[in-house]
Length: 390
Image 1 (cartoon, rainbow, N blue to C red):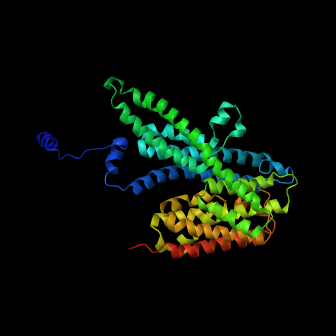
Image 2 (tube, rainbow, N blue to C red; image 1 turned 120 degrees about the vertical axis):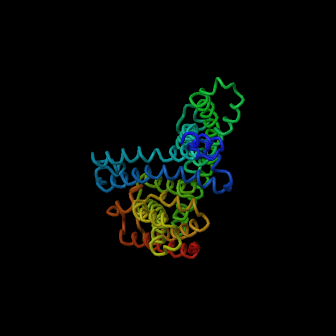
Image 3 (cartoon, rainbow, N blue to C red; image 1 turned 60 degrees about the vertical axis):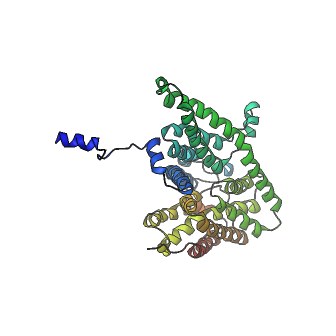
């Protein structure tokens, strides 16, 4: 009856709908630990990022599979029309990874006003813009801050909006409609841009230092170098360490008259990058009681991710439980990189995973290196990650 409904509302007993905006998120955040909130924001970014990583990465790998390296080794991946089509589309999809990550982390923190600000921060991290290259109109001075920079941009972008929201609360109510369409985007993007342009050189300096260290090891101990490069691919899975190892490996392919020594470095890098998703996938298969049902379902996808050399497939597991996931992955990747060097495997392609096995020197030994590394990673993980409480 209408009278009963009105009385229920007056007594404040009627259920109330809360939208998924910032106010609702602030209410739901009450009682959550800081660590839990950070994890929730991070996973929102990662879950939206993965389709771009998976789709783009696999298309790039397929481009190497269908291409003919003999036409032009320097342009491997784009020598034939089909390969060029696949690689171009894949690169474009893959290029959205960092902006999407940062944008949706910021959106998780600050609702829709945070999306644009985080997206711009991730793009600036990816582009590596610094005050030096902007003022000099010189793109060669760009210093990408990579995955870590995008993470930073996401969280900073979200909290920039939170701060702006508090500052603009003091404005007249007549200006309320201008906040989401003018004030938040303009002020937020400006602040975000200045922060990221200032931060990029710092993380870039870390990358440079790592590259210099790796270059100094070339030719001294190939097996040790392979172990270090392989392990670095697992330390942060897309961050400065990972990118430093990958850039060092790909740079070897551009050396004039590149040969077996340069190809061996790239092979060790890719072997190390393939192991983390594979180790996690194996562990979710053979040690199911260590993972939740949703994690076991996600683990199956990591077989494809690992074989396609998409290390980022391991990020959700590593981000959710870094203490128990990262060390086993690092050990397994280091073993794979060392074995690849010991077997004198060589890789003239900068990407591709299992899809470029046809161009790898000593392919059987290379597969053995990756499998052994993944199995060792799985075994160590089975010890570090204890069974879940029923």
